[in-house]
Structures are given as structure tokens and as C-alpha cells.
Amino acid sequence: MEFFFFPDRMFIQVCLYFYCKCLWRCLKFVVRKLTGRCELQRICYNTKPGAARTMKIEASLKGSKSKRLQTSVSVHPDAIEKTIDDIMELKKINPDINPQLGVSLQACLLQIVGYRNLIVEVEKLRREPYDSENLQHEEMLLKLWKCLKPNSPLKARISKQWCEIGFQGDDPKTDFRGMGLLGLYNLVYFAEWDTEVAQQVLSDSLHPKYSQFSKVEWEKKKFDKAIGYSFAIVGINITDLAYNLLVSGALKTHFYNVAPEAPTLTHFQQTFCYLMHEFHKFWIEEDPLDIMEFNRVREKFHKRILKQLQNPEMALCPHFAASESLINM
Image 1 (cartoon, helix red, strand yellow):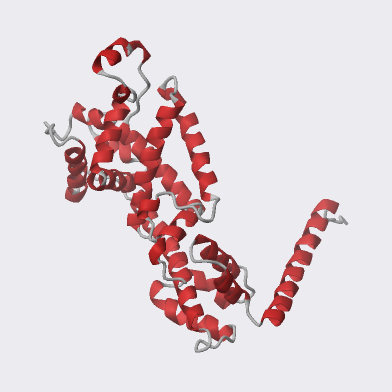
Image 2: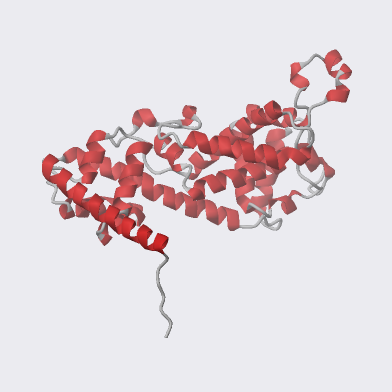
């Protein structure tokens, strides 16, 4: 007969886990008795609106021993008001005495549920392939060209001209395979709603250091040109970066600080615009020797963004922020 034993280290870790879990629950019980408030109340009353509060509420609900509280973070948006009533009832909180608590919890749940739904929406776009037989897809692609090159008519749908805005060949549809329609949606949004910046980034991507010199100086420094990059291909790559930040939960800090209620696809696209602009500046600062250094520069940029998002008060693009109108007070 064989006997199986836990390794000493694993046994100690298991014991430590249950000890800490029991200790934490006991501590929460004592604090509630002393303050007369449950954990959700303490978070809402002691933490200002934004990512810090919403992320604590989310962690508290997910870590609850109550299944009703655990599932409250994944309800349908239309069921949020009913869910708040259930939470108040479960926690024995009188809404007439604590009216602001319901408002705060509702705003937090709108953000939490909205973030989950945004992932679903973005994932759906990412999985939808570009279809050249789809008129809407084709119209979006042509709109991208018109926004970026308004003074240069496209001579044909299949054309080497597409390389001028950073596609790899004469038919851009093959470049959208990795990110599907999501890549096209983001590029079109950038080109249409932030046109001046998008055109400048495109121009600089072809001649990264040109704007720093006069024409004479530039001609003299031709041997020392900075390495450019393919605008559209990099846009699809940055879409992948934004997608991974979203799915990993790293963007919660940003979205919970800028979206007063549920973060939307527009918030995601605005974040993409910010990342494109910031990556462009970062690329020029890094001044890589050749395009083969792209992955190194991208990874370094990714780490910098992740570090920024570790700050609970971080808003990547504050000019999109709606913190002043946050309703979860």
C-alpha cells in the first residue's frame, strides 16, 4: 500500500492560507461590531470615488462567502438596481438611513459590470474577420484612406498605395488577421476623430526626425535618418497591446477613473488613440537602430504603461476623464 504525504512546504502554505482567511473574517467581524458598518459601507464612506473605491468594492464582493454577493459583479446592467436592493437586505442596511450607500454601490457596479461587458464587445470585434465582400467593412477601409490622405485619391481598391499609410501589401485585408475588425475600428476612430494628430503621426512615422530640421539640414543628415515604422501595422499592434491591457484587468484603473458609469467601446478607442500617440513619441525617444528592434521598444513601452496603471489615481488620457462628474460620491 502506498502512502501519500503533503510536502512540508505545501502543508504549511495550506495551513497559512486557511489561518489568514479565518483571521481576516474574524477581523472583519470585530471591525463591524466596533464601527457598526459592514466592509462595503466602510469602503464607500472612507474611499473617494474612482478606481480605488470601485476596485475595493469589486474585491470585497468577489471575496464574500455569500454567493449572492459573488455573482453581483456579473449581473445584467438592467438588474443592477435590484442587485443593490438585495445587497442592502443581505447586509441588513436600512436604505432610508444610508441613502448615499445605494448610489455609491450602484455607480461601482455599473463600472464593474460595464468593464466585463466591454471585454465581451471588444472580443467580438477581434474575432470578426475582415470581409472584402462586406460593404460596411470596405467603406470603413476607404474612410481610413480618405481621413489620412485627403489630398491623394486612391487609384484602385487593390493598390500599392496602401503601403503609404503603413500596410504591408496591395490589399490591407490580409493585415487585419490578428486583430480582426477591432484593428480597423481603432485605426478609423483615430483617423476620423483625432485627424490632425493621426496625420502628423503618419507623416512622422515616414520621416521621424524630419520636423526637427530645416530642409537643408535634413538633406545633409540623410545618412543619419531615424528609423520609421509602418503606421497601420503598428496601429494593429498597439490594438493588440490595448486589448491585452483590457483583458488582463490592467485598464480597470484607467476606466474606473474616467468613466462615471459603464466604460464603453468609445472609452477603449480613446485609450487606443492615446497609446498610439504615446508610442510614437516613445519610438522617437528610443531612436532604434532598425525596425528589428520594434519588439524590444514595444515591450519597454508596455512595461511603462503597466507601471503607470499601478497607480490607483491614474488616468492615461485625462482630457477624456469624467472624474468631475463621477456619480459614485
